Image 1 (tube, rainbow, N blue to C red):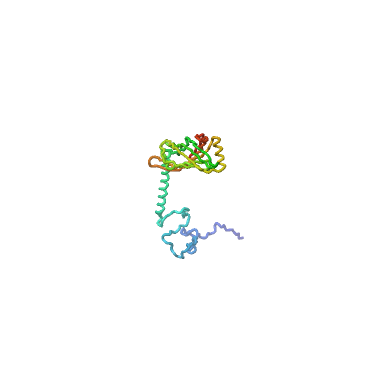
Image 2 (image 1 turned 90 degrees about the vertical axis):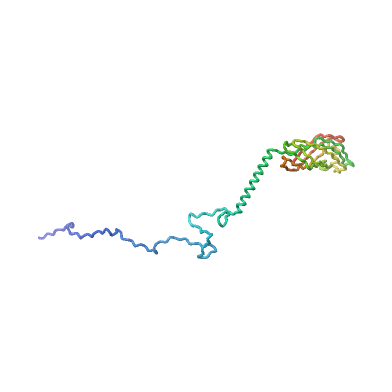
Length: 274
């Protein structure tokens, strides 16, 4: 009786193994893409400046603007430059003129301040020392005739400055009516000096309104007559031998005298301003 034996697969003949080629790559080579198959970078479209034709090159003095993050932004302030990139001569001349102007202004201001601190100039003063009402009466009740003598005092309070009075006029008023005008001869008030001028004012047949005529009659009866003296002076202060400056002075005095004749000064109030 025939018995069938199972064959062990380990004992079966094995097929020959193919030899390993060391020069053969592990992965099959990939085909290289051609030049036409490579991805091309995106090129932004070129804008053509206004007024230029296609293919026209820019002039050599107009540099092309560089695109990208390194491009400089234009300055908001205009800079006066010439075609070669240098500052124009006109700009240098203007800058030099402005600098010289401000230097002159500063130096002049310092000079005025120093002169003021050294000399300390002050305005002259005007005052009425005495006054005499020699006569005053009304013709026909409204025509005024008066004779008034004033001793004016011009004082220079400066210790380092002399003052020249080249023009001086004194006016006599009763309320708002001009009675007389007197011109004073030019004179000089030296340092810390007072000059006295005797001013004689005479009025004749000056018409007064009825209301003012009645007021004047009442004042002469009561023994208190009021007049107004106004002065206009042209003065010049001498700060040394070189520095001089002129100005106008205005004075206003209100005086009260006793009744005529031989009326004397009772009260006064004087102000002087430029």
